[in-house]
Amino acid sequence: MVISVILTATFATEACSIVTKELFAPCYYYLSPLPYFEQCRRDTCKCGLVCMCSALSHYAHLCHRFGVLIDFRSNVSECGKSKVCFIWLALSCEDTKEYSTCVSTCNKTCQAISVPETCSDDCVEGCTCPLGMYLNIKTDRCVQQ
Image 1 (cartoon, one colour):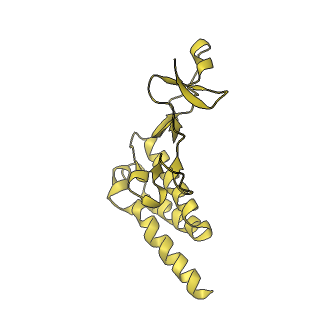
Image 2 (cartoon, rainbow, N blue to C red):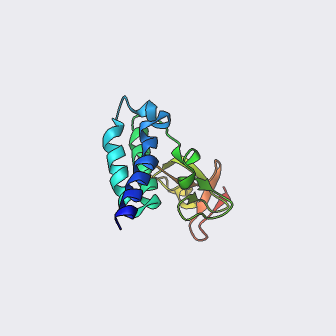
Image 3 (cartoon, rainbow, N blue to C red):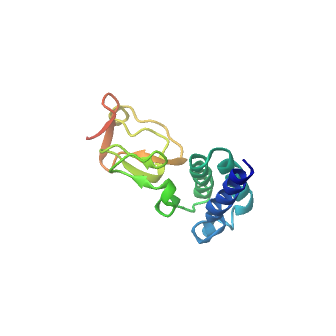
């Protein structure tokens, strides 16, 4: 039991250290990495890679609010993005959608063409329809206009 706790803590420290390295460095001017490193470490100790990826995503999202784009999923294989197969920890998009680090919180749906939504500039990472395509909410697939 003690050995597994030590191994978990060592893994969490090593895995979360990405927050203190070059990938996230452009964000340091706006947000110190230290509290996010500690939060990542605590979360990773509790529930492993799922929580690690979530913690990294949270820090990247906050960095984006300052105009700093961090595409950590391209650099952290455990949290990687996959279109070919669904990897439990990875963000996987259906075949008609694509991954983006900044997806509008407004839905780009067929309905929105006729009834435009008022949207904010906020965004989140996720899957979205490619440029020029819209989401058919009945089939949950991207279609041409």
